Length: 247
Length: 289
Image 1 (cartoon, rainbow over the protein chains, first blue to last red):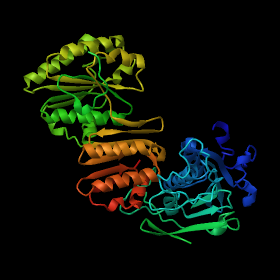
Image 2 (tube, rainbow over the protein chains, first blue to last red; image 1 turned 120 degrees about the vertical axis):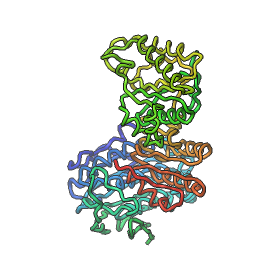
Image 3 (tube, chains in turn yellow, orange; image 1 turned 90 degrees about the vertical axis):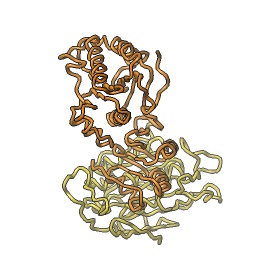
Image 4 (spheres, one colour; image 1 turned 30 degrees about the vertical axis):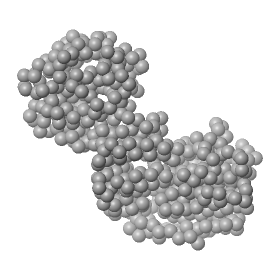
């Protein structure tokens, strides 16, 4: 793993580095393809099963640095982890994460190159299609080598991301892998389940506020027009309990 | 005598001179609480030497479901510091320390207790004290003092702070080596048995890669104990699969047992999302930071 898993542009506010991408990462759209303004991308990092801890740590640090409120940081880290873990376990075995900020929204995008052809083994992890955690559909790539369907099941990774993100999209390219993006509003706090009656960490004595502002599809660059298949999970929150529907 | 392979804290008998190794303060307090709890339940006199004063010691034990205040008031339990017992100023002398221990044995016998349990947090030996080279002799003489008595001594060593040479030099004088049953231990994650209250303790960050260890820990505690606690107060991250694994395990037994899940608010929200907070028999308790 080593060097090619290192963050490329880790310092918030710096231009994302574009050098060093390997040919195997060509499935990932370049920042310019998103039309992102300079400085929008705050983190780019490759990952595999051995670097998920480092990935979570980097996501947490950079999300905090751009002002993500303390008690939503955990949601951002969770989303990043679950999307990355899905890529590791049910996709290419490795992938690429990118964080960017646009119009007060933090976007967490995870992309992978799709499942390896039959006979190939995902590096450093269980074979793709091992559905112990259930987020992938076993045998979903029966046509051979195409990207596995990422399915959202109650309690599993993608379901959780759909519950905690302000918006969540999964785009499956034409055999070129999967791009999943979770978006979070900056600077606001969500309602925690009233039953828990707990205070936000690090802010003793202050009660949780109410989240305001929604993410629009327009704020998800690349989410429209590229997808052969698009799934949007929209959430409705009621006393901290979310419901999800697929469109 | 040489130490056997690691025993459980609950296996100790009256004449043991046990060497307990621990990795974190939380683990030390948990194992000490079990040692104290079982000693008081057997009607023994219990002495705990540590940095913690009587109030803090009582608080740590109470937090783990071991109420000691009445035992302290009655003289059955003593929690005190090292000074004038093992240390005199910044000096340690093995013969003086052994004399203190012999005095405790005599006192317990005179007070009518059927036996004595002494837990000694050995972290004092990490300080700049003179006479530290007498530590192996102290351990050797403890073994001699305990011979033929109904007393047991639990020497508590921080395995990360004591060097391996020191640990090896004292290990041979103990009848048993005691440690928490550990299912996973690396720099990121530790999963071990919790003894007071009974359950599993998960600290660090856990994801699907440690799911097998977590499943084993849960399966064993469910088989061994009735009511269980899953202590996640030092857990900084848990992924969806492990959250679901714990939720399914405790939901399955909550019909006729009590389960306590202790964790931070973010992790509690994950369990609440699965409806765990509404299941009869399961208590979801948040510890804020």
